[in-house]
Amino acid sequence: MDLRKLQIFLVVAEQLSFSAAAKQLHMAQPAVSIAIRKLEEELGTLLLERAHRGIRLTEEGLVTQARARDILQQVKELNHCVGEMANLLRGEVRIACPSMVATYLLPELLGDFLLTHTGLTASVTQNGTQHIEQMLLDDQIELGVVTITDGQEGLETQPLIEQEVQLCVALDHPLAKHQVIELPQLSNLAMVIYESDYYIRKLLDAACATHKVSPDIRLQTNFLPLIKGMVKRGIGVTVGLNMMAEQEDSLAGIPFQPPIHIQMAIAKRRGRVISRANQALLDWLAHAPHVAP
Image (cartoon, rainbow, N blue to C red; front, top):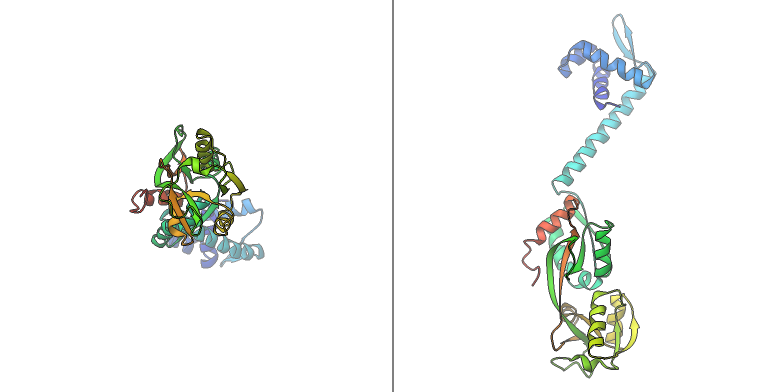
């Protein structure tokens, strides 16, 4: 249905005069009459009764008048809402990231962004970076945090952070006072670590295989709070990014020798058009002072 016909009808219904409505609408009177006739044909009912001294609304016309007002108001509100989103006043940022990044980086990073864009909200889902990369390539998500590796031609990446992988232990653990840790020292060491689909676990497994080391894996889980709780209780040690040890007062972080580093980025599929809210986050991150320290 042509909304313009509804607008014309409402003016005619208010004025109860084709000539007065035409004057208000800056239209020729025949054009107004034609619009009303076409609307009546489209609805299959008479909306206005023409009389010698003017016109009046039929019962169907009264109902149409009320509904037309509602429809045009909803259209106005829709246009206003979309307009606000276009101006980045409203909308939702949606991002997938690993739990360690969500726990130790996003509170500051995403918090600063939302304080700058007060009309935006955010939705964060948790997954490993390798799974996130596949979700991006499959168009299941628009934005996600990935580990920068070779062979990512299908993604456009914005550098986010570079971190050192450390052995994280309880403060009273025998290794807590060590300045560095070498891979052979992990032999038979009790550990609580991420499951094998996480990149940091794959790094650990590859390093252990190179040095023919077999840790005593006591627990495998993707729940970061569970890993932290087990480490603090002395059930085992874990591997994490250095920001984990920096922000957990009850943990000590021990660098590996030789050092192991991970570079992470926020990514989208190459060539994909994403929402204005998500694009605003990418643009903001490109100039954020605390990104990629």
